[in-house]
Length: 581
Image 1 (tube, one colour):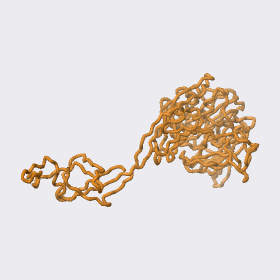
Image 2: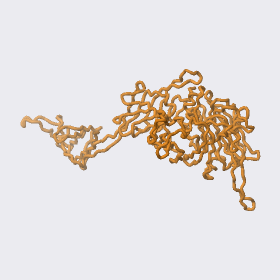
Image 3: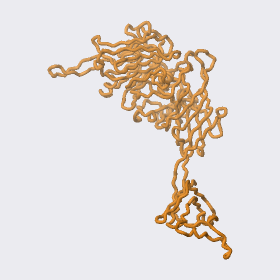
Image 4: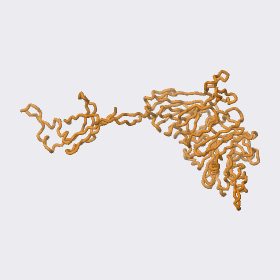
């Protein structure tokens, strides 16, 4: 043991904070609580009494079928029904109006999201999660039971692993996940950036009021547009054939040809935006859910989506004179159902009989729900048609025309032509347009088309949010109402304060030792004395241990060196001892 004791002052002491991440895992008993986590089943959709209501009080009734004409108003004229939107995972109340969503770029964390009418809330005590939950550490295992569409009265059961993506989104990962339980597996979300998507989630407020018309503005990244809904009915798929599909889709849009139902997308807020939606010779993809309720009757078929309409374009003649002309026939893409048999027909039309066509390998049966994808990669166009029983049937063709000849400045029409005479009867939902070709590897569980198919056109397996700084995990997606939570694990972030003590010794210190083997008994002196060789210049002992003592001589910390260290004779030596508080 060293025989040198040195006093320390404040300059030798430092406190260094660092973060440690503790793993907390628990099995949830009866879906209620465990030793760590507490589970709440929240329902914030009570139906209010409209006859006995305080006009100054906000009422939670999101999703209630009552609409504006039956909805009471506050003293300042705003509707009482309140929804909750989320920006950067912070929810705030917002009255039901057609406000433009202008919250930044395409980052999903900055897009408005709505609370569904039910939620599962997982709460972790602050003493466990500390300052925050570590992003990327959440895993929630859930059991589910949904109605079997093929065997009414029976349930499809299974289990999902839900994980966070380090950005606060809770997604299904690496396990079985499918719309009705046919062994479909997926691992994440569509990887391509969406250029436009319809309808908007705030359509819940129009549920069950019949055919209605309204306008909604939307901004997603660099894609700005105005959506005009004409005589479109908003409701749910209630057929017993598709209980699970209805759960995934939520509110859907129903089109009626006799009412000239349509959605008009106006990307021509500026010429540049309208031009981008042509895609010209670039790759693109279109995805949608389709459920026809009757056969097309118009000789030219029923329009599902088309970018075609009378748009005035300015031209310069050979003499330099500017003139205008209307070009209604050009179309960079048009998808329709053929008359009589509901065969899907995709067309690119440059006018003057300069046209590309591709027909689906299978017709769309009445009252069946399909996922339809049009994918263009290079000069090849592929059409993929999937239903709940078959992953897909596909067909492809090669474009021989110059696609720039098909470009126009027209609006995009869903469910009808620009003339209003090629109306579709049925449901069109989750329409998405991408600027790239979607991946479609049949064996790849994370391919884009598979992810769209199993999520009914949603494109991701988003199930809820993780509020890292609050120790809260909230499951809000529609399918979560069928979940029972069986286990939860995550890492809590805790700041630990580390004390650092600098122990500096001068040259020549610690050149003597109290080790008994270095001593002999001197009978003359009646005491132990050091051997003669110990005091020689050749004796250079090693330091192996540093001890820290308080003013009372109590040993507080022992620092054991990983290897013995011999101190030099010409310089100072500093030993740094660290210990957690």
